[in-house]
Image (tube, rainbow, N blue to C red):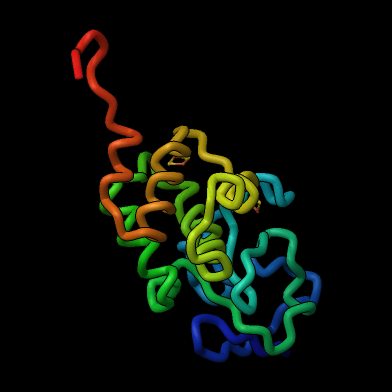
Length: 167
Ligand code: FES
Ligand code: FES
């Protein structure tokens, strides 16, 4: 029997040590906000935090976690960086189909936690492993910058004038 610390609660789980964390979160504990995409650490849909670091839960054996603190999309809004990121996501209207977005938010919140004012290279490095089939990348970048600076004028970077219109 393992004991996992998830979102501030302790969960006893009777699972094999090599079961990936994603399966335990979704199928054993019942936290389904974290998504399955590729299952091979290539898409980022399954991203959660372990001791504040963004990790791919689809390839992380639960037996390796010990007492480390796991945070999922269901609770990231309780952290200062997660709260800022989620509000910016709403303000910028990032989401399209939504499937990738819990992973995107978890990666962005971890970035903001360690780098409060990220530049483009920081954002690229942190977010390049999170794939969005709907192509929300420009809005994700704008939302991260807005969360960091609190300046809504960054929205202008994604609202361009109609073609042929004079400025
Ligand atoms: S499902 Fe884990 S990275 Fe794709
Ligand atoms: S919002 Fe649809 S895959 Fe990203």
